[in-house]
Image (tube, rainbow, N blue to C red):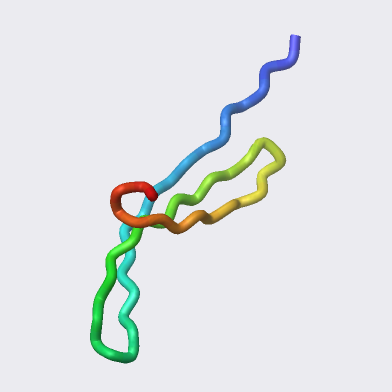
Length: 48
């Protein structure tokens, strides 16, 4: 019987500084899929 590993997930809160001085926080989620590929996804802090 073969067992598939569930993808791993890591989260990081980062900030983007634009040229006008505005700082925007965002959430970067790293997922490692079953093939070992790291997939980053950026969202707002509320997940949208």
